[in-house]
Length: 107
Image 1 (tube, rainbow, N blue to C red):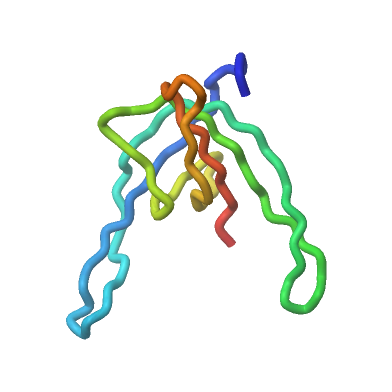
Image 2: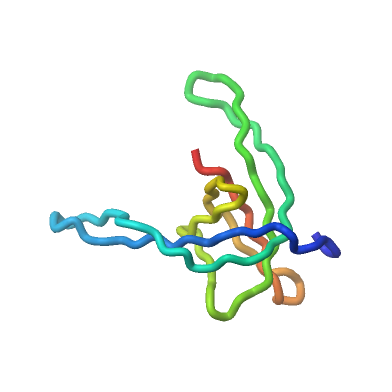
């Protein structure tokens, strides 16, 4: 991804979790944690559904500048082009100035 421009806007959302007064937890909302520019590369992943049919999930690789005020985790949701994605993996680049996120479209 070296040399590619950071031209795509993405947003990171953090879930608000509350107790349900019965010993469990429930997601009661989300907070926009960060809106930033990224370098996005799209891929599709073949997978087989429960009934044996081949379907395709959209997978993205997003590279963003590291932000000391915000660190994404696997429970952070990402929005790009009005579609939500779940973070599958987070890695630093060689110089530790950028993060490379592997994202899978939420079904």
